[in-house]
Length: 189
View 1: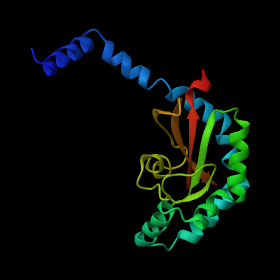
View 2 (view 1 turned 30 degrees about the vertical axis):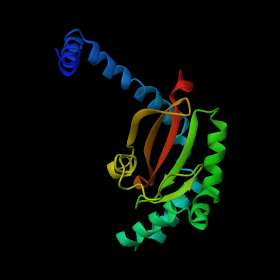
View 3 (view 1 turned 120 degrees about the vertical axis):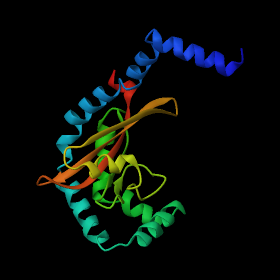
View 4 (view 1 turned 45 degrees about the vertical axis):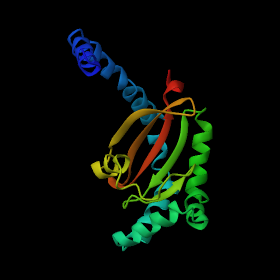
């Protein structure tokens, strides 16, 4: 029997005895505690005036950008344009996020706020790109409307098990932007 057939036979047997479904449930077991954590500890400060003002300002600044302009900004970011990176990491909203990250006791590993175009507004740590609208973190939060929470899969990062959670940020019941946080799921146990 070749190895592919053996693997398929084992996988089929595991599914019949319920091993695969329980693995899938375990894989998503982080969603409920991550959601509970952000609802209790993060949502209350998402309406802080410093966050809302930064997003509203960014939305106005970026309102007339064409996709080519957004691509140019993203390319500058990827080329490590220091002034552009500093504009999102050295502002009042970024300082606010750093305070919240530091106060979390290591639960929050990163935080970044995006505007209604998916462009970074403020962040605690660098991101690989500036434009997030092409990714699930923005599409399933801002793109889903007010009150949306999207918890992504857990990934290992430096020995930590991190799940990114993204939420819509609203002002007066209107979605204006989104936030993504890295959550150390081991710290929630």
